[in-house]
Length: 339
Ligand SMILES: NC(=O)c1ccc[n+]([C@@H]2O[C@H](COP(=O)([O-])OP(=O)(O)OC[C@H]3O[C@@H](n4cnc5c(N)ncnc54)[C@H](OP(=O)(O)O)[C@@H]3O)[C@@H](O)[C@H]2O)c1
Image (cartoon, rainbow, N blue to C red; front, side):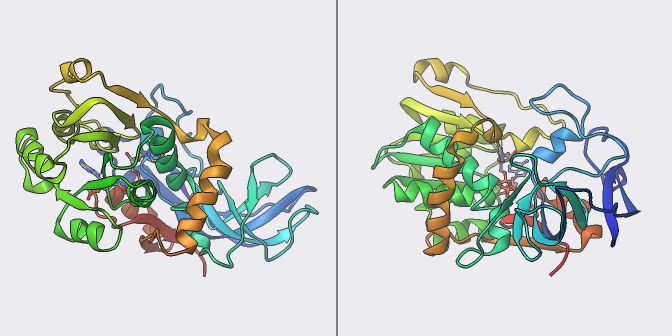
Protein backbone atom coordinates (compact mmCIF):
# COMPACT_ATOMS: atom_id res chain seq x y z
CA UNK A 1 0.00 0.00 0.00
CA UNK A 2 1.29 3.52 -0.85
CA UNK A 3 2.54 6.10 1.60
CA UNK A 4 -0.03 8.87 1.98
CA UNK A 5 0.59 12.57 2.58
CA UNK A 6 -2.19 14.26 4.54
CA UNK A 7 -2.89 17.75 5.86
CA UNK A 8 -4.31 17.86 9.36
CA UNK A 9 -5.92 20.71 11.26
CA UNK A 10 -3.26 21.26 13.91
CA UNK A 11 -4.80 24.19 15.84
CA UNK A 12 -7.75 26.54 15.49
CA UNK A 13 -7.45 30.06 14.05
CA UNK A 14 -7.69 33.09 16.28
CA UNK A 15 -9.14 35.69 13.88
CA UNK A 16 -7.72 35.12 10.39
CA UNK A 17 -6.78 31.58 9.41
CA UNK A 18 -3.04 31.11 8.73
CA UNK A 19 -0.80 28.39 7.26
CA UNK A 20 0.36 27.53 10.80
CA UNK A 21 -3.13 26.13 11.55
CA UNK A 22 -2.30 23.18 9.26
CA UNK A 23 0.26 20.37 9.51
CA UNK A 24 1.61 18.02 6.84
CA UNK A 25 1.72 14.40 7.99
CA UNK A 26 2.96 11.27 6.17
CA UNK A 27 1.14 8.06 7.07
CA UNK A 28 0.95 4.44 5.95
CA UNK A 29 -2.19 3.39 4.07
CA UNK A 30 -4.02 0.53 5.82
CA UNK A 31 -4.75 -2.76 4.00
CA UNK A 32 -8.20 -2.91 2.41
CA UNK A 33 -10.99 -4.75 4.22
CA UNK A 34 -13.96 -6.39 2.45
CA UNK A 35 -16.18 -3.72 0.80
CA UNK A 36 -13.42 -1.06 0.74
CA UNK A 37 -11.65 0.59 -2.17
CA UNK A 38 -8.43 2.58 -2.42
CA UNK A 39 -8.85 5.86 -4.30
CA UNK A 40 -5.91 7.81 -5.74
CA UNK A 41 -7.01 11.46 -5.71
CA UNK A 42 -6.48 13.53 -8.84
CA UNK A 43 -7.96 16.75 -7.46
CA UNK A 44 -8.96 18.13 -4.07
CA UNK A 45 -11.67 20.80 -3.88
CA UNK A 46 -11.03 23.84 -1.68
CA UNK A 47 -14.26 25.49 -0.53
CA UNK A 48 -15.09 28.49 1.66
CA UNK A 49 -17.21 26.35 4.06
CA UNK A 50 -13.97 24.73 5.30
CA UNK A 51 -13.11 27.99 7.08
CA UNK A 52 -16.23 27.71 9.25
CA UNK A 53 -15.35 24.15 10.23
CA UNK A 54 -11.93 25.25 11.47
CA UNK A 55 -13.72 27.03 14.35
CA UNK A 56 -15.10 25.17 17.34
CA UNK A 57 -18.46 26.90 17.02
CA UNK A 58 -22.11 25.88 16.81
CA UNK A 59 -23.02 25.51 13.16
CA UNK A 60 -24.99 23.34 10.73
CA UNK A 61 -21.99 20.95 10.59
CA UNK A 62 -19.63 19.47 13.17
CA UNK A 63 -16.32 21.33 13.56
CA UNK A 64 -13.27 19.79 11.89
CA UNK A 65 -11.54 17.63 14.56
CA UNK A 66 -8.02 18.65 15.57
CA UNK A 67 -5.22 16.24 14.59
CA UNK A 68 -7.35 14.72 11.81
CA UNK A 69 -7.15 15.02 8.03
CA UNK A 70 -9.04 18.09 6.81
CA UNK A 71 -12.33 17.07 5.18
CA UNK A 72 -13.02 17.94 1.57
CA UNK A 73 -14.38 16.80 -1.78
CA UNK A 74 -12.10 14.82 -4.09
CA UNK A 75 -12.14 13.22 -7.53
CA UNK A 76 -9.86 10.38 -8.48
CA UNK A 77 -9.60 6.81 -9.66
CA UNK A 78 -9.94 3.45 -8.00
CA UNK A 79 -6.50 1.81 -7.76
CA UNK A 80 -7.45 -1.24 -5.65
CA UNK A 81 -10.86 -2.67 -4.83
CA UNK A 82 -12.44 -5.22 -2.52
CA UNK A 83 -15.92 -4.06 -3.54
CA UNK A 84 -17.67 -5.76 -6.49
CA UNK A 85 -19.34 -2.46 -7.52
CA UNK A 86 -16.01 -0.65 -8.10
CA UNK A 87 -13.27 -1.75 -10.47
CA UNK A 88 -9.68 -0.54 -10.81
CA UNK A 89 -9.71 2.45 -13.18
CA UNK A 90 -13.21 3.69 -12.26
CA UNK A 91 -13.35 7.48 -11.96
CA UNK A 92 -15.04 8.49 -8.73
CA UNK A 93 -16.18 11.50 -6.67
CA UNK A 94 -16.10 11.36 -2.88
CA UNK A 95 -15.16 13.16 0.30
CA UNK A 96 -11.58 11.92 0.42
CA UNK A 97 -10.19 14.95 2.27
CA UNK A 98 -6.87 16.79 2.10
CA UNK A 99 -4.74 13.74 1.28
CA UNK A 100 -3.30 11.89 -1.70
CA UNK A 101 -5.22 8.63 -1.20
CA UNK A 102 -8.30 7.54 0.70
CA UNK A 103 -9.57 4.16 1.80
CA UNK A 104 -13.35 4.27 1.39
CA UNK A 105 -16.02 1.93 2.69
CA UNK A 106 -17.80 1.99 -0.66
CA UNK A 107 -20.73 0.01 0.72
CA UNK A 108 -21.89 3.11 2.60
CA UNK A 109 -24.62 4.93 0.63
CA UNK A 110 -23.27 8.06 -1.06
CA UNK A 111 -19.65 7.47 0.03
CA UNK A 112 -18.37 7.16 -3.54
CA UNK A 113 -20.02 7.94 -6.88
CA UNK A 114 -18.79 6.75 -10.28
CA UNK A 115 -18.68 9.49 -12.92
CA UNK A 116 -18.47 9.55 -16.70
CA UNK A 117 -15.60 11.62 -18.11
CA UNK A 118 -16.48 11.15 -21.81
CA UNK A 119 -17.89 14.69 -22.20
CA UNK A 120 -17.16 16.28 -18.83
CA UNK A 121 -13.64 16.62 -17.37
CA UNK A 122 -13.12 14.84 -14.06
CA UNK A 123 -12.30 18.07 -12.21
CA UNK A 124 -15.68 19.63 -13.18
CA UNK A 125 -17.38 17.18 -10.81
CA UNK A 126 -15.94 19.28 -7.96
CA UNK A 127 -17.21 22.54 -9.46
CA UNK A 128 -19.80 23.25 -12.13
CA UNK A 129 -21.14 19.68 -12.18
CA UNK A 130 -20.71 19.19 -8.45
CA UNK A 131 -21.57 20.77 -5.13
CA UNK A 132 -20.97 24.43 -6.15
CA UNK A 133 -23.07 24.02 -9.33
CA UNK A 134 -25.95 22.46 -7.41
CA UNK A 135 -25.66 25.30 -4.88
CA UNK A 136 -26.23 27.87 -7.63
CA UNK A 137 -29.10 25.79 -9.02
CA UNK A 138 -30.86 25.43 -5.66
CA UNK A 139 -30.66 29.11 -4.74
CA UNK A 140 -31.81 30.25 -8.16
CA UNK A 141 -34.48 27.68 -8.96
CA UNK A 142 -35.92 26.88 -5.53
CA UNK A 143 -35.52 30.16 -3.63
CA UNK A 144 -35.33 32.97 -6.18
CA UNK A 145 -37.77 31.31 -8.64
CA UNK A 146 -36.80 33.53 -11.58
CA UNK A 147 -39.07 34.55 -14.42
CA UNK A 148 -37.87 35.41 -17.92
CA UNK A 149 -37.16 39.12 -18.25
CA UNK A 150 -36.42 39.64 -14.56
CA UNK A 151 -33.05 40.88 -13.28
CA UNK A 152 -30.77 38.61 -11.25
CA UNK A 153 -27.61 39.65 -9.39
CA UNK A 154 -24.90 37.44 -7.90
CA UNK A 155 -21.80 38.36 -5.87
CA UNK A 156 -18.46 36.47 -6.09
CA UNK A 157 -19.63 36.29 -9.70
CA UNK A 158 -16.62 34.57 -11.30
CA UNK A 159 -16.22 31.89 -8.63
CA UNK A 160 -17.37 28.29 -8.72
CA UNK A 161 -20.93 29.09 -7.61
CA UNK A 162 -21.21 32.48 -9.35
CA UNK A 163 -20.18 31.20 -12.78
CA UNK A 164 -22.71 28.36 -12.64
CA UNK A 165 -25.35 30.85 -11.51
CA UNK A 166 -24.71 32.96 -14.63
CA UNK A 167 -25.30 30.08 -17.03
CA UNK A 168 -28.44 28.93 -15.19
CA UNK A 169 -29.87 32.43 -14.97
CA UNK A 170 -29.19 33.22 -18.65
CA UNK A 171 -30.81 29.90 -19.61
CA UNK A 172 -33.99 31.17 -17.93
CA UNK A 173 -34.02 34.40 -19.94
CA UNK A 174 -33.00 36.74 -17.12
CA UNK A 175 -30.85 39.85 -17.22
CA UNK A 176 -27.87 38.66 -15.20
CA UNK A 177 -25.49 41.02 -13.42
CA UNK A 178 -22.38 40.03 -11.50
CA UNK A 179 -20.40 41.70 -8.72
CA UNK A 180 -16.72 40.71 -8.56
CA UNK A 181 -13.35 41.98 -7.39
CA UNK A 182 -11.13 43.63 -10.01
CA UNK A 183 -11.20 44.51 -13.71
CA UNK A 184 -9.91 41.13 -14.97
CA UNK A 185 -12.65 39.19 -13.21
CA UNK A 186 -15.32 41.64 -14.41
CA UNK A 187 -14.12 41.51 -18.02
CA UNK A 188 -14.07 37.72 -17.88
CA UNK A 189 -17.58 37.65 -16.41
CA UNK A 190 -18.99 39.53 -19.41
CA UNK A 191 -16.77 38.11 -22.18
CA UNK A 192 -16.72 34.44 -21.16
CA UNK A 193 -19.39 33.71 -18.56
CA UNK A 194 -22.25 35.48 -20.34
CA UNK A 195 -23.08 38.11 -17.71
CA UNK A 196 -24.89 41.14 -19.15
CA UNK A 197 -22.81 43.39 -16.90
CA UNK A 198 -20.36 43.01 -14.03
CA UNK A 199 -19.52 45.58 -11.35
CA UNK A 200 -16.10 45.78 -9.73
CA UNK A 201 -16.98 46.31 -6.06
CA UNK A 202 -13.37 47.28 -5.30
CA UNK A 203 -13.94 50.55 -7.19
CA UNK A 204 -16.60 51.49 -4.63
CA UNK A 205 -15.71 52.61 -1.14
CA UNK A 206 -19.21 52.35 0.30
CA UNK A 207 -22.74 51.04 -0.27
CA UNK A 208 -24.17 54.30 -1.76
CA UNK A 209 -21.44 54.29 -4.42
CA UNK A 210 -21.98 50.61 -5.28
CA UNK A 211 -25.72 51.24 -5.28
CA UNK A 212 -25.31 53.91 -7.99
CA UNK A 213 -23.38 51.43 -10.15
CA UNK A 214 -26.12 48.83 -9.60
CA UNK A 215 -28.76 51.34 -10.70
CA UNK A 216 -26.99 51.71 -14.03
CA UNK A 217 -26.48 47.95 -14.50
CA UNK A 218 -30.01 47.07 -13.36
CA UNK A 219 -32.27 49.79 -14.83
CA UNK A 220 -35.42 47.84 -13.92
CA UNK A 221 -34.26 47.11 -10.35
CA UNK A 222 -33.29 43.70 -8.93
CA UNK A 223 -35.78 40.83 -8.64
CA UNK A 224 -33.43 38.11 -7.41
CA UNK A 225 -30.14 38.33 -5.52
CA UNK A 226 -27.85 35.38 -4.84
CA UNK A 227 -25.78 36.41 -1.81
CA UNK A 228 -22.25 35.04 -1.46
CA UNK A 229 -20.47 37.86 0.33
CA UNK A 230 -22.40 40.00 2.87
CA UNK A 231 -21.46 43.40 4.30
CA UNK A 232 -21.27 46.45 2.05
CA UNK A 233 -22.29 44.45 -1.04
CA UNK A 234 -25.53 43.26 0.57
CA UNK A 235 -26.30 46.79 1.78
CA UNK A 236 -25.94 48.15 -1.76
CA UNK A 237 -28.07 45.41 -3.34
CA UNK A 238 -30.84 45.90 -0.74
CA UNK A 239 -31.24 49.50 -1.89
CA UNK A 240 -32.02 48.30 -5.44
CA UNK A 241 -34.35 45.37 -4.72
CA UNK A 242 -37.80 45.49 -6.32
CA UNK A 243 -40.96 44.85 -4.34
CA UNK A 244 -41.44 41.11 -3.70
CA UNK A 245 -37.81 40.42 -4.61
CA UNK A 246 -36.10 37.24 -3.40
CA UNK A 247 -32.68 36.92 -1.78
CA UNK A 248 -31.05 33.47 -1.55
CA UNK A 249 -28.49 33.70 1.26
CA UNK A 250 -25.81 31.23 0.21
CA UNK A 251 -22.65 32.60 1.82
CA UNK A 252 -21.18 35.60 3.64
CA UNK A 253 -17.51 35.12 2.89
CA UNK A 254 -16.60 38.70 3.90
CA UNK A 255 -17.19 37.61 7.51
CA UNK A 256 -15.65 34.11 7.56
CA UNK A 257 -12.42 35.27 9.18
CA UNK A 258 -14.38 36.95 11.98
CA UNK A 259 -15.07 40.46 10.63
CA UNK A 260 -18.47 41.78 11.79
CA UNK A 261 -21.08 42.18 9.03
CA UNK A 262 -23.50 44.91 10.09
CA UNK A 263 -26.68 45.31 8.04
CA UNK A 264 -27.37 48.99 7.37
CA UNK A 265 -30.86 48.96 5.84
CA UNK A 266 -32.86 46.03 7.30
CA UNK A 267 -36.09 48.07 7.03
CA UNK A 268 -35.93 47.61 3.25
CA UNK A 269 -36.82 43.94 3.78
CA UNK A 270 -40.15 45.12 5.13
CA UNK A 271 -40.68 48.08 2.82
CA UNK A 272 -40.08 45.92 -0.27
CA UNK A 273 -41.77 42.76 1.15
CA UNK A 274 -38.63 40.73 0.40
CA UNK A 275 -38.18 37.01 0.85
CA UNK A 276 -34.75 36.36 2.40
CA UNK A 277 -33.86 32.69 2.81
CA UNK A 278 -30.65 30.93 3.77
CA UNK A 279 -29.92 27.37 2.67
CA UNK A 280 -27.32 24.59 2.86
CA UNK A 281 -27.08 22.58 -0.34
CA UNK A 282 -26.28 19.28 1.36
CA UNK A 283 -29.69 19.39 3.06
CA UNK A 284 -31.44 19.20 -0.32
CA UNK A 285 -30.08 15.99 -1.82
CA UNK A 286 -33.44 15.41 -3.52
CA UNK A 287 -32.68 18.10 -6.15
CA UNK A 288 -29.14 16.96 -6.98
CA UNK A 289 -30.02 14.57 -9.87
CA UNK A 290 -32.16 17.19 -11.64
CA UNK A 291 -29.63 19.96 -11.03
CA UNK A 292 -26.62 17.86 -12.08
CA UNK A 293 -28.39 16.87 -15.29
CA UNK A 294 -28.90 20.50 -16.31
CA UNK A 295 -25.40 21.53 -15.21
CA UNK A 296 -23.81 18.58 -17.05
CA UNK A 297 -25.59 19.56 -20.26
CA UNK A 298 -24.51 23.21 -19.90
CA UNK A 299 -20.86 22.16 -19.46
CA UNK A 300 -20.90 19.52 -22.21
CA UNK A 301 -22.43 22.02 -24.68
CA UNK A 302 -19.97 24.79 -23.79
CA UNK A 303 -22.65 27.09 -22.30
CA UNK A 304 -21.01 26.93 -18.88
CA UNK A 305 -17.27 27.45 -19.03
CA UNK A 306 -15.88 26.24 -15.74
CA UNK A 307 -12.68 28.17 -15.16
CA UNK A 308 -10.35 26.66 -12.57
CA UNK A 309 -7.49 27.89 -10.37
CA UNK A 310 -5.22 24.89 -9.84
CA UNK A 311 -2.56 24.69 -7.13
CA UNK A 312 0.03 21.96 -7.58
CA UNK A 313 0.66 19.36 -4.91
CA UNK A 314 -0.85 18.76 -1.47
CA UNK A 315 1.75 21.03 0.17
CA UNK A 316 0.22 23.96 -1.76
CA UNK A 317 -3.27 23.40 -0.31
CA UNK A 318 -3.08 25.66 2.78
CA UNK A 319 -1.84 28.73 0.86
CA UNK A 320 -4.36 28.12 -1.93
CA UNK A 321 -7.13 27.87 0.68
CA UNK A 322 -6.07 31.11 2.37
CA UNK A 323 -5.97 32.72 -1.09
CA UNK A 324 -9.55 31.60 -1.78
CA UNK A 325 -10.68 33.50 1.32
CA UNK A 326 -8.97 36.63 -0.06
CA UNK A 327 -10.24 36.34 -3.64
CA UNK A 328 -6.87 35.30 -5.09
CA UNK A 329 -8.59 32.37 -6.88
CA UNK A 330 -10.03 32.99 -10.34
CA UNK A 331 -12.66 30.30 -10.81
CA UNK A 332 -13.06 27.02 -8.94
CA UNK A 333 -10.09 26.49 -6.57
CA UNK A 334 -8.60 23.01 -6.87
CA UNK A 335 -5.40 21.27 -5.82
CA UNK A 336 -3.86 18.79 -8.26
CA UNK A 337 -2.68 15.76 -6.29
CA UNK A 338 -1.95 13.23 -9.08
CA UNK A 339 -2.22 13.23 -12.87
N1 LIG B 1 -24.98 27.46 1.34
C1 LIG B 1 -24.32 26.47 0.75
O1 LIG B 1 -24.74 25.32 0.78
C2 LIG B 1 -23.04 26.79 0.02
C3 LIG B 1 -22.42 25.83 -0.78
C4 LIG B 1 -21.28 26.20 -1.50
C5 LIG B 1 -20.77 27.50 -1.41
N2 LIG B 1 -21.38 28.39 -0.57
C6 LIG B 1 -20.92 29.78 -0.48
O2 LIG B 1 -20.89 30.31 -1.78
C7 LIG B 1 -19.92 31.36 -1.85
C8 LIG B 1 -19.03 31.13 -3.07
O3 LIG B 1 -18.35 29.90 -2.91
P1 LIG B 1 -17.41 29.36 -4.07
O4 LIG B 1 -17.01 27.99 -3.70
O5 LIG B 1 -18.04 29.60 -5.39
O6 LIG B 1 -16.12 30.28 -3.91
P2 LIG B 1 -15.50 31.25 -5.01
O7 LIG B 1 -16.53 32.25 -5.37
O8 LIG B 1 -14.92 30.42 -6.09
O9 LIG B 1 -14.33 31.94 -4.21
C9 LIG B 1 -14.59 32.84 -3.17
C10 LIG B 1 -14.70 34.28 -3.72
O10 LIG B 1 -15.27 35.09 -2.74
C11 LIG B 1 -14.89 36.42 -2.99
N3 LIG B 1 -14.51 37.08 -1.74
C12 LIG B 1 -13.62 36.67 -0.84
N4 LIG B 1 -13.54 37.55 0.18
C13 LIG B 1 -14.38 38.54 -0.12
C14 LIG B 1 -14.73 39.75 0.54
N5 LIG B 1 -14.19 40.10 1.73
N6 LIG B 1 -15.62 40.55 -0.05
C15 LIG B 1 -16.17 40.20 -1.22
N7 LIG B 1 -15.87 39.06 -1.90
C16 LIG B 1 -14.99 38.25 -1.33
C17 LIG B 1 -13.71 36.38 -3.94
O11 LIG B 1 -14.14 36.83 -5.21
P3 LIG B 1 -13.87 38.38 -5.66
O12 LIG B 1 -12.41 38.43 -5.99
O13 LIG B 1 -14.75 38.53 -6.81
O14 LIG B 1 -14.19 39.19 -4.47
C18 LIG B 1 -13.36 34.91 -4.00
O15 LIG B 1 -12.82 34.55 -5.24
C19 LIG B 1 -19.20 31.34 -0.50
O16 LIG B 1 -19.76 32.32 0.31
C20 LIG B 1 -19.51 29.96 0.04
O17 LIG B 1 -19.42 29.90 1.44
C21 LIG B 1 -22.50 28.06 0.14
